[in-house]
Length: 292
Image 1 (cartoon, one colour):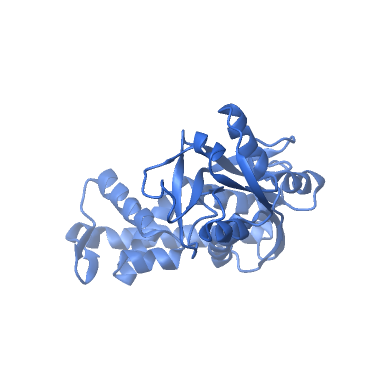
Image 2 (tube, helix red, strand yellow):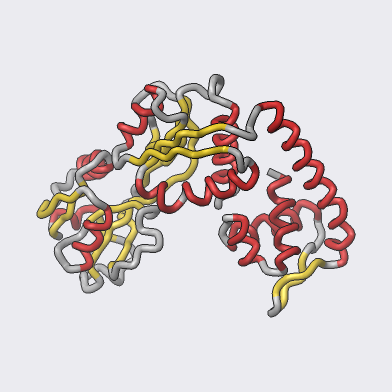
């Protein structure tokens, strides 16, 4: 992880701008800022001077820059030799995933992985149901798969991130301006229900809080549900990841009490995974650990 931090710092220096460096690295601006702040705290020095025109190295940063470059170059050369030993100049990784991961996570993960291993090919299989993806992994149809934890099958899994369930409301809804949406309110408002594996999570939430939703519509597409909410046909529940960058005019509120799903990556056996799959799993874990 330190090498990743060093590379983020070097790219920021080269670009002269944290936001542009973050975009090129596939990170968020806040993640790169946090990486630099962590290094400054760890080393007890100021590394960058920030101004209206961007960022430049401080005097301490100038003194450390040659050593940072040497470490990063040595790391890259070492990994290139290791890649040759493990045959990672060629290979295929078959990934099972669901829609929101396919849209919001996987393209960035593939891009950053292929920058290091350009000879690797990806085959992506998408399904809306988590259980089907678990079965693909268990049956060897894919090498790894993004799922909701815990897995119902015996698989090796790693936790990646917690994703909030959010109420999706029309903009003119009486609670559109409130901080959150009470789960009990689903018994009153017209409810638009998603018919897929995620429905089990929502059913469990309603059972936990003894709420009978006022069910009016059933759909099997996230964006169809959002469009129906936008047109005032009711309210729905979707995850925060699904709702990233949505162009629809809706209000999005955390549930009260808060509810979550845990997203993980699964392989049939980490010990017997191919070198390419094992390296991709490590790559995804590092990405998640850095909070990007």
